[in-house]
Image (tube, rainbow, N blue to C red; front, side, top):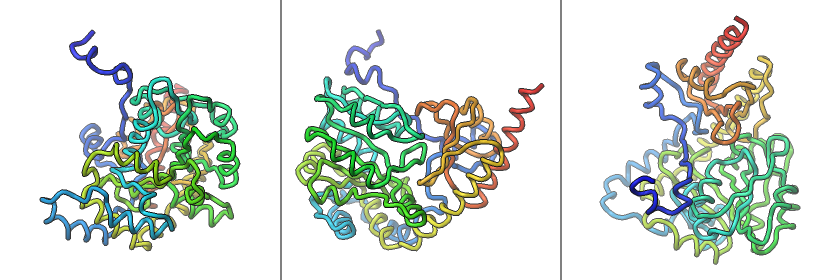
Length: 378
């Protein structure tokens, strides 16, 4: 036994940490070539220039602590979503809120339920709280809500549903989620993780699908917490700012568990400005819809079967070790996400970038996969 292992809690001793996508700097140092990053589902167009200007305006005030309640942004979000500010909690990214919810509602002997091959933070947050995570098998690369409902027992307190799902990009339509929520017992809170909602709403409008009634469920007082983030469509991933919308009493408990002053004044200013720049978001959404089709067809032309996406990334099973492929792609200047830690050892997730970035990815991917084929046939 090591010097400190007996001092930390048993869940922490066995906990696997989050493995982030490689930063550009790290990848370029490793590979010795200039890289593009298509691993972490970031906005390829960066933040809104309004948000950048807003950040600059508040930089000289960073000697002051930020507003712990993020009052102005909560008010603006309440207005946007038609819900009271007391139903909203702003945190340092929605991943921070996942940890807060787990620490508030889970403990040894209790459990949370989710799907296999879903967001990697769900097991980390659950296990860190000393609880058990029940993962049901996937259905068509996404959530099997009937199986999730069947897995709920007397010790279940949380259900995590990523919609669209990360990393597969699949969607549960509004009626499917509505039917599921009608089955959930009163001792369970359902977390509807809608980090990619902007992309899903755009696709849904084009495809004639009813995406989500999540906020209506909150307004009706159901045991539902909706997660949103500024990290994706708004391009503010580096600022760490997201929020949850849920029952007033429950949000109040979560607020007690957050880290004091965790949302910076710079992040709040940027988020407020980003909400006002709808055109910047629409440019990203339109590019994403167009380029997703190009990427899907490009994969298919090479004989692969990518999963049609409702988010800003494409999931594809390569039928071979994805970590090896990712390393070779990095040597060609492209960073993608191998999904072994998520439960998909042969799959990669590729962020949908600009047309130029996507063309660079495809050229590198063809080169790497042709090399693999040649190596196998020799």
